Structures are given as structure tokens and as C-alpha cells.
Image 1 (tube, helix red, strand yellow):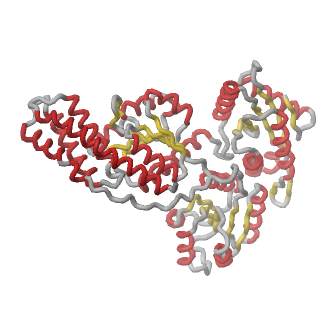
Image 2: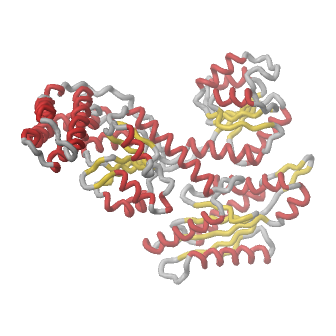
Image 3: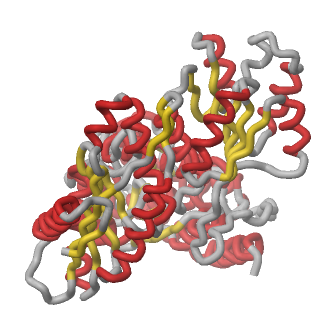
Length: 544
């Protein structure tokens, strides 16, 4: 069944359930005929109108959605007035009459056809070598940068003229363009309008490099959706790191979404919509299980209704914020609440955005994706080393503890490896810290290229690194990491006219199910094994 067919099936189920919902509304509305209607009945009526106003528009009934929202607001005014002076008979009878006429607004419209999703998770998790195109009319600089890109396992191609790049682009599309281009501002003969049109329509990510650094130039780069801007002379390690970050976002794992809402059909609609957009969607029907759900599903974002039976969305958001680990987890309210003051009050309770139902498909998808991207960027800044993009000291130690707890529960083996660049002080003393940073960056980049996507990588400090390899025994870990060690020593680094290589020593500690060893001891054992490798000749791997 296609995506559109699934959405239309959910729409038909909603339309079939609508008469029952309207009948419930009419039954509860009978309370308005009594001089002192029961508060609980009116609250139940308000809840049904709230749900109707939020869902009807989504399922092709915009007129019914608008009318239900209006009636809910009038009912709210009656509820607010009762404690003080009571509501007039005229107001209640007029509201009852309008509620009885709700069925007149049931005029179904076909849901708009949406293009089928182009989301493609790839085959068997296979990682393709990213292709990078470089436009640089300084041949010497371009060649040097090309060499660095290729050393880090990028498939890179150098162009010295925009016309050549444009011709090649008709036949192939790189993932990232690194351009030395200022839209004609550097006296180049290329037609700047042609460049602008090309960049505006390009599907590739763009990184600008330039000899000029001023506000106008950066503004032009921003207008053309540049992901980064680097000023010459280039800091190549930082450029490589930013390139890795751009590619990481480009190939980021699916957004993990948790939906908390009591409207079953509307939840199914949102779930199908976001799933088709490439997201992993889970639904929580029992708010009291929020802690276990967050721990198990690890969502990137929560979509939550503001009004649910037995629980207030604001209070649930406040409960989530009581846990330090989820203080930064984005929460978006999806609600039919139109009162700006109540919306602001809800946002002050720990949410990040407020979307009023019915929300368009495109708005919801864009809101979720943009919030997740920004949240992941902030999390990276907090937990990752700025030079290498690997986890910082505290974060990698926490990763070891987390993997230890998981392996212990599941009865699985895993390995922790400690890596240290040999004679690194001599590299800094002889060639300078900029070249030293390049060597450190190369370790991080090569680790990402050679290890599995499930392996966790961290910079422990200075020139030391930690690798956490889940579901992996010592022999397997040794084969993978020794291959990395050999490939690292083959890299050539340039310092002026001089070239040199570096080596690395590795120690591995293994956790086996049933052994009495904790996460801290694993790190200590890996560290001891690594120092044993150094004492016995360096550029080798030792099992602890």
C-alpha cells in the first residue's frame, strides 16, 4: 500500500468514527439545558470539542475544525463565568443549538496527494566514500588541499575554473562543494549571476573559502546557503573537521520522534506522515511510563498534546525537565489551544514550540527536522571535542559506563581500546602545534572511516583516544584496530618542504559476560595495555 493510500485509509476510519463522536457531543451538550450544568460534563464536552478542532482539519474537514474551535472557546467562557455570576440561559441555549448543528459542517474533502518519500536508508548500512569537489584557481593551494582530502579517504576532485566545474556537474553531483568564489568580487571573469543561479539550485552542500573576510562577503555566502566559511590561509584541520560535520549532518541517522497524544487516529496519521519523511516514530499512550520510554527509545524530540484525559501536558513537560539528562530534549506542543496567554504559559513550562492544530504536513515535518538538527548541534557542542569532533573526556567515559551496563544486562562481550600517538611531543616541537593538530585530526578522521558506525569514539585528552566497540570480542577488535594502525602509519604529513609519518600504540581491554570487572577497570586495563605497547617498541597493539 502506498503512502497516500495509507493516509486516505486513516481518513476514512476517522470519517466512520465521526458520527459516534458527534453523538457523544450531543449527549454531553444536554447538560446545557439545565440551570446548573455539571462541571465534569462540561469539561468532557470541552475535551471532545478540543480534539475535534485539532483533528478534523487534518482529515480534510477544515470547516468542522474551525467551528469546533469556536464552540470550544464559547464553552470555555461559560465555564469561566459560572463560579462568579453563572452563565445566562440564552448563552447556554444558543451554544446547545450550535452544537446540535455541528453535523452540517461535515463536508469531507479529499486529502491532497503527496509525492512518495525519497527517503532511502541505504543498503545494509553500507558507507559510501563521500565525493568532494574543490574549486580553487590557485593550483598549488588546490593540489595541497586535494592531497589532504584524499589522505582522509575522501573522493576529491580539483577544478581550477567554474566553467569546468559546471560542465562536470551536468553529469555527476558531489555531496560537498568547497569553493574559492566570491561572486565576481575578486576580479575573476566568471559571470557572477551564473554562479549565483547555480549555487542557489545546487543540491550539494557548500563550503566557502576566501582571502577576504568582511561582512558583505559572509552575507553573500549565507544567502547562498553556505554551510561554512573559511578564510585563507586555511586552517586545514578545522576545515576537515567542519567537512566531517557537514557530511555527518547529511548522513545523520533518522530523527527519533516520540508522540504523546490521546487521539488515536490523529496519532496514526502523524506517525505515518513522519515515518514517510524518514523518521523513527514511537507513540506513548501511558504518560506515567515516560521515564522508561525515554530511556528505551532515546527520542530526539517529543510531540505532545496540551490537553489529555487525566494529565496536563504542561505538567508532563515539567516532569521530563526534572531529569538532568532531558533538560535539553526538544518538546513541541501540538494543540488546538488558540488562547495566546495559555500558549505562553505552556511554553514557560519547558516546551520549545507551540503548533496549533490542524497543522499542515509540511509545517510539522519542517518543524521537527529543524528542531532536531539544532538540538543535535547543541549536543555536539556540549559533548564533542572541537578539534576532532569526537566525544570529550567525560562523554566517552560515560559511553564506556553505558555500554558496560548494556553488555552486562544482555550478556554480551564488548571491548574498550586506548590509543596514543607515538612521540607526539616531538611532532609539536619540530613542526609546530598546527601540524600537530593535523596529526590529531587525522587519527579521528581515519577512525571514523575504518571502524563500524556503531563504535563510539572519543578524545580522552591530548593525543590519547578511546574506542568503545559493542558486541565485539578481543580478537575481532584487534583485527580492526591493527588494520587502522597500519593505515595510519601510511599517512604522509607535510610541514613546508618536509614530509613525515606518525605511528600509534594501542591497548585493548575486553569485557566478557559474567566477569567481575566494571567500566572504570576496563579503562584502566586498556590504558595499561597501551603503555605496554609503548614500552615494548611502540607502533603495536597489545591485548590487556
